[in-house]
Image (cartoon, rainbow, N blue to C red; front, side, top):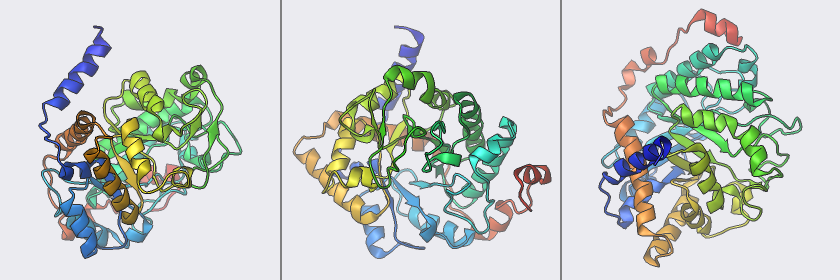
Length: 376
């Protein structure tokens, strides 16, 4: 057994030491759900608490100001079991950001990378993470590891750090280190690369016509760097990639998850992109897509609305009862989630709201702001 294989074996062995006796309640750890507003409804509290849901994804409609956000997060975390929930968001910078007023508004990653300074990228993401962390957000679906190789690709475009693997690889590593230094877990996306597509998976199913060798040579380079940078999450995109699986979207393809695990030697959490995107939702119904994604290799399935999460959760419970999902496989996923939470959130404390004004860095480094083209 070589050193890399032994390292992977050791990680799996350590995961198995976390005791998980599978019952219906633990299945909730495999779900991240959206919520409806600025605070939880009673029905939302009941579903999250009774089913031990693993995490929440927040959007613009869940945000008013930092104080309200922190109160919402504290409210959510009162429903936690042994470990806190993942409180997640898409706060990339540029045109993809859910929290605007009071938060530093970073320019696009393409603009930041033009400075050719990984140090600047690191510092920008550290500031971003410090602000998120101050409000209790602990996971950011960032950075994009996609290479902007197709100039007509608008869904990625300037969300990417650049048009070559060398540029993207360099800045992806700096962004992950910045987020982690600011105490927010990073998520590399959109595996295996969304930069050479025309269709938007929010509305349709994109196709990538590349061989596996071409992917390894180019698209996967930033993802390999992200894995080596100890990123905690990897997001699986909704794409049909010719060199991996000609029939199934990667988010539902066992071949895609196996490829990610084997090529990247990635042992941490694989989360799906939003399962309500039309690339998947118009092809599957009644929660069957969640069952298929978990069976294929996803650790966590993500839904933007609680209505769809509930539907998917019920479908997964039914699949467990019918033994359509293997117990040992699900237990390993739950261990992976709990291992991440135990490592990163063991010292959890609720947010003290009166201290937010000091915690949100109101006065930032003048040089950093100047370089980013921002005002204090």
